[in-house]
Image (cartoon, rainbow, N blue to C red; front, side, top):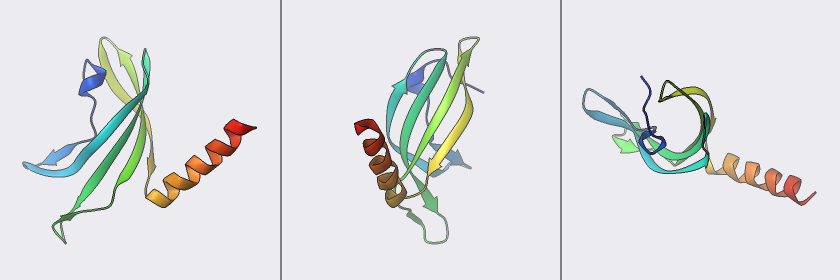
Length: 95
């Protein structure tokens, strides 16, 4: 089920009242009929009972009938991968 406002979009996730994904931050990259949102989050490691390292995800939502529905996502699994993406994008933007 979608949500009606871009502010309500989240990657936070609970199962049986246990938070398994904790949203740390989000940036709206584009708005409109299609919205793009970059999230920073952590997964809960049940074995260690601790939060894992920061991860990042870019998600695309389509707004139909006044509700945003997730249509696609790309997960950036580590700070190292994020740094590589930043480096490549900075290079391309300078060209």
